[in-house]
Length: 524
Image (cartoon, rainbow, N blue to C red; front, side, top):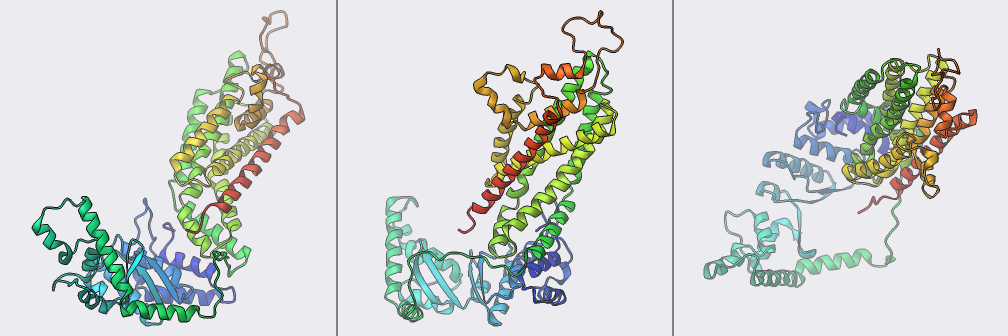
């Protein structure tokens, strides 16, 4: 987690992956010892770093990654290209660290990309593959001798690792030089690909006839002797070393800390909401109790509702941004799915949805001049917050199984636009054809707008100062009259049924989100 320090990341791994029988003091001692072993003492209290936060160097980041796994003292450690993206010196220091660990009794298996000679000579055992077929598996120091015996000799100053790659790809000086000198071959021509296939077949065949292959085969047969052989893939079970509450406490604490240390998600959202609220408040400022006030109030309520829907689209990034981290930590046994899900929902809803909704309501409500009663104000705020929650849960349900934020945003924008049409402002809902009218029941803005309309318009009079004889026909004089024209049921049940619908929709969307997270592919 880039927003946390190296020490905090190690402490998180230790707290969740070491058994609860180990005391917190012992866990802290283990973390300090590991920091020292990995040579991270200087940067222990520095943040790892994100795209926006300057953090530790590439080599220190790799060592932190390795340290996260070493917390549990694994006897075998698998590493996928641990030197990728590092300069030669940093890559060398990372491999020297791994070599020290190997000397202390750990088995370290790694794939590596173009290692220099000082790194290559650290290896004890070497495996070479061509298109998934094994062409060598044996002592690393004997590899040159093996290839020399089968007709491929490494030049005196050539790096053995590069030499092996050249042979495998059919580009070795020993393989290709004579051909290049005799004829100018196109690298993509059929003859070159045929030549490569021939070399590949030769390497596979030579390996199958050598003593390394026979020794390995005999060793494997000895291992599997007398053991039950199954053709079905083994079921993967994830074991946890700590209970639900311990996991929940640590994950929730980390999630909140991540939000607080990411100003672009927390502070920026509140600032943008405040700016938008001031703009809306200025446009609809002091709505009068006359015919223009009816239009202004309706327009303002519509904007407030739709704004909550569109501002909730930012939650699409919630699971997508941390997808790789979540999958890695989940299958490594850090925490249960329910722990991660609840922590994310609570942190996102409390900080990124509730606070902006409260700020927006406080500014807009008094600037526009809605009903000046405490009851109306708090019901307005409750409705706005609930609308935001429902829109957020819809965004999460859509984006939970997506890998690209842009695609999730397209789906959510389409959904929000369709919902906006059936909100009640752009089209008069009672006038919609019967075969289409059922779509209004899936519109989040409709429920929010209807509740806000009842809360605001009920009891208002827009014809004050006019007696009944002066009132022109077709003029809307009372809030109730306006609500009836809109097809809104302004009874007590008519008001609260909107909130009930929003709550039911929120629960349904969150269940869909959980199920999507539960069944996304986690094992490759």
